[in-house]
Amino acid sequence: MHARSTLIALALLAAGASAQANDLLDQLKEKASAAASSQGSNLGFKMPAIGSSTIGSAAGVLQYCVKNNYLGGDAASVKDKLLAKITGQKQQEKNFESGAKGLLKGGDGKTLNMKILSSKVKEKACDYVLKNATSLI
View 1 (cartoon, rainbow, N blue to C red):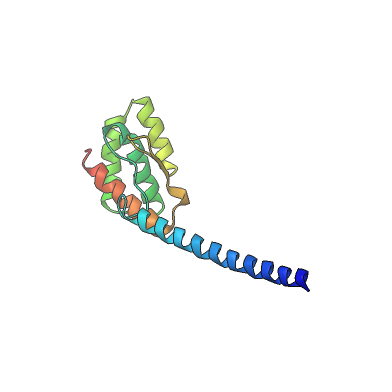
View 2: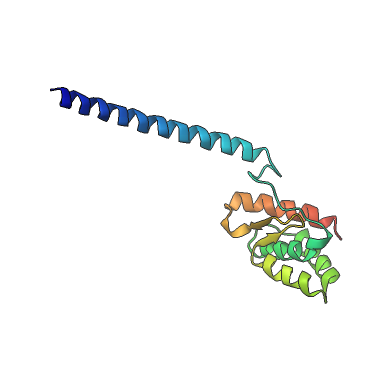
């Protein structure tokens, strides 16, 4: 009987530990989500810095955003003006190519792959790039 009681107690402990682990995991997810949403442009993460060294990348991402219908109107014009600034600059042209594939490289060394974001977050990220790229014209 003693072994059976021990097995029952261990089973109950394991079930309780599993429930506690799930509760702890849920709490960690909530804290991570809350912390992430307080950073950057309220996108859930900090966006790469856009500046004069990242004109090509920003222009490429604007092309990506327009092509995929996350931005319209003024974005194509801003992209064209940025492209005019980088013509003949090999590194900036290479950054444009990466940006056009959805990869934003920031001057702070951070990189953002737009392809892995949800549509709603892509829209916000595209808006962020447009606002910051406009100041580079």
